[in-house]
Image (cartoon, rainbow, N blue to C red; front, top):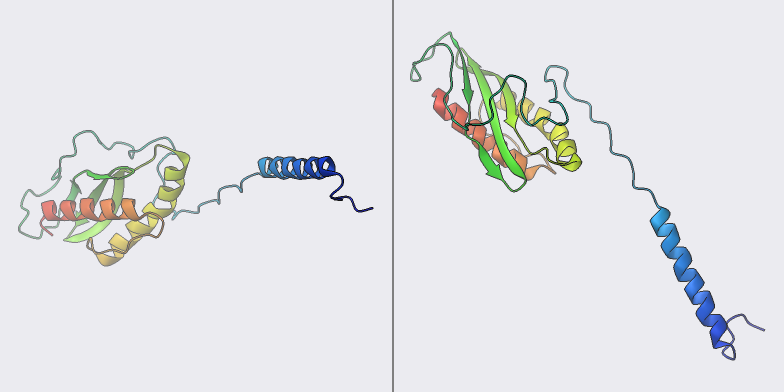
Length: 170
């Protein structure tokens, strides 16, 4: 006789229940994949995992226009200026960048604040921030491409970078 014979409905119920329980057990036993290892540019050291600010950077005020060197913003000078952009609030947290300018050219861009509250934020920003930095250095402006998967961080980065460049007179 056939195992799912209509004369034995209890057997059908037991087999369906056993199949359902087996399927649920297999789903719960499935392990998620491990996070990929991110390789960063050696010229731009990545910030530590638990920190949202680079060493020595002040992230409390959100002031723009902190500079060292020549105080004239309308003329090009040979001095090195460091300008911190405005803090931009994004959906996932604040983004703020610091720009170093020498002889009217952007020589360094550092993310002072960025979302890092959870491991997913850290994973996204460990990937996105070096790309945004290299884009800004190559473009020498805030007209940079958005990093796929880090749209909010990219937009905040661009806005903060533009405010820093505006404060520096570029």
